Length: 215
Image: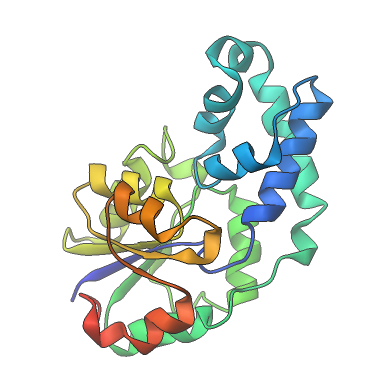
């Protein structure tokens, strides 16, 4: 069966705006005022890529590690407010019932992923999952998607994600993407980034799952 590679942040758990606030606070703590809307446009990109994308490579070299550490601390102060998106676990159950191999593809730190697995009660549903420790470069590079495919032991896969960076990463790995609007990116943005089809929510995707390659 087809491998279902599913992004976690913004796709299964409602974290994108929490991360945007955490990055905003981290940048300000190091003297950089980056507007929240612009930070949001980069959520879904791994922290190793995001800092340079927003303030430049030279500033990243000088301040990047401190900013990333500050974001981690700021986000952990907010993580208790994070909840699963409606229908997230039900989608995982439906894919499991269809005998799909499920790999949760995240560039989050291992402790964050462990927290999400508990929130979703997903350990018995997912075959495996990735963290930032599994790759050298995160989204939009293809490394996470490739790592997820390797964990699944196959190459016939479909990605489910909420951000343009999920779509870009999957496209570079030659994997089609099903997009959802739960991360705050528009249908047009996801389609332009390579999403084959876009659903308003996880609930809508679940309802129309039979019309997708994962049906």
